[in-house]
Image (tube, rainbow, N blue to C red; front, side, top):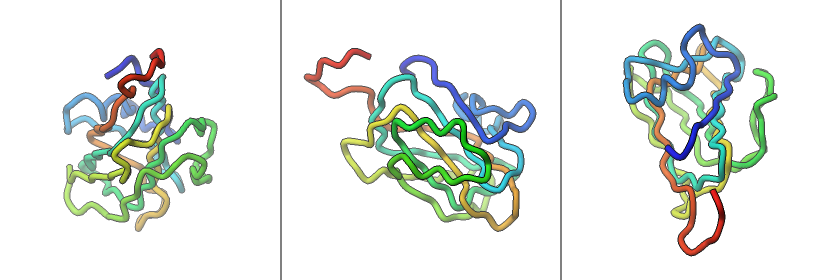
Amino acid sequence: MFGAWTFKSSQDAAGLTMINALDGNITTEARTTGHPLPYQIIYFGKPMRVTAVWITAGANFPLASLDVRVGNSDFRSYTTNQRITGNIRCGSYLGPTRIKNEVVYISCSNPRGIIGTYLSIQMTERATINSPLEIAELKVEGFARECNVQTAF
């Protein structure tokens, strides 16, 4: 990773923060508490060109109706009753996942990537009301700079 990423969720379940989804271990999970529109937001700390996102479902709650967005707008002050709509949609996943640790691939459909300092993952609708957003692993594909561009990172 390029520097330390910071995280914000609608509300983390006790001890199940987003750092668990980046540890390379599918037995640890990031989980929000149950809310109408739970989300996880990652702040990269610098511009990234995101091309795809791999999300591994947790063991207890399926992933469904995911909306993944990339951009420069900071939605970390959103409430759990608001849809995140301001950044560019990378992609979505209707789901639901059917087995624990099923991997969901979301392509941004842009070989150059979508530029942004924030990545948001939000569940917009679910079969179970107020179920949490649970992610066992998250991998973000992309790159942090273009060749022959003198941008300091």
